[in-house]
Image 1 (cartoon, one colour):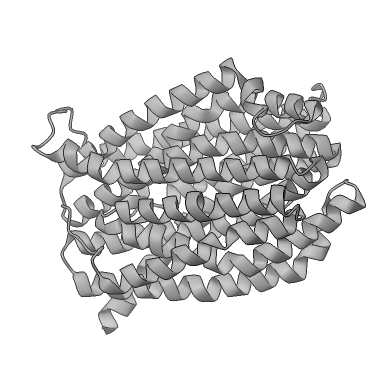
Image 2 (tube, rainbow, N blue to C red):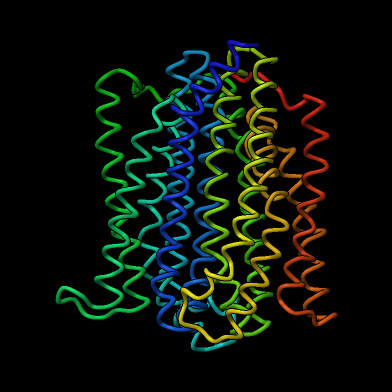
Length: 447
């Protein structure tokens, strides 16, 4: 047990910490856009929020495919199976590129039609359309970045994806300043400038990772297998793991977009307030999505070597980290929220609503975070991804969405009350997740 503890602490610093930092900086791209656009008023804030909501469907879907790749790569890496690593990467990369191409076509071809699903305010629709039609160009570079980051950190090389993300955020912030406000001789593009900056920074991040990946291959840390004849049953195994994750994350993201449409139809001020909470929510979730990803990799490595007791002990340690960390961050949100709302140039009513939503978020955040780590990271590491599919389908579509429509349209509650009620579906997920975790049925060796 002492050895497990020492190994665990070492991997936390060499793997989990870089992944967490990378997740934070990836989340920061949209956060910086929202903060810097915040000085342009409520219409621009709502526009970037709704345009970003549709873009989130793309990123969540791609992340789902990366999750599938990570589950397989982690176990094959634990089993020292180089062909299994490469096959897992190429199959999921192919799926991801097809998905990103479809969403890019939709966003470039009919952005206004998409944005009309979120709001009735013509000014907000126009603003969100402008943002989405430019950001869509970054979908393919983002896909390549996420997939290469997945394979690198699944084999223990998490630092370079972290460095690439840090570089991307620095570039994005600098370009935001230039393009949004018209500095250094550039025209003042406002909301469009934020979209241009995000797109360029994602392209640069992709190029950094591709250069590094080529060096990793030359060193032999990853062996490229040009033979695309997969082992018997491999594609079936990939699909068995992938389709529940893909369907789960897509339907969850679609549900989140339905929530956004509910908020959007409660009024522009309410929609702007919910958008202003986005940076805080993204930072908290970004921090612990790194913990969740690290949990999946570190537990998956042990499952791949059939060290079941060690895998379970590490999983329990990650749940403890999530519990304590989320409680601390919730307290920080409560304390800093009154200061945070004064960053933005918005109406006093929007500030008040934003503060109330943040307090509700602080209350429900620990439950969200534990679900992400225990279900999204740990339960999936054994390949039985249909567990989380069922949990998310029931939670989002049978509990959250009905409660959202009922409270918003029948009870006529304000947005902060609507948000609290529909968030109660997270409690259902957590209870069932912990029961499944203790039964250990999720523990499975794939490699």
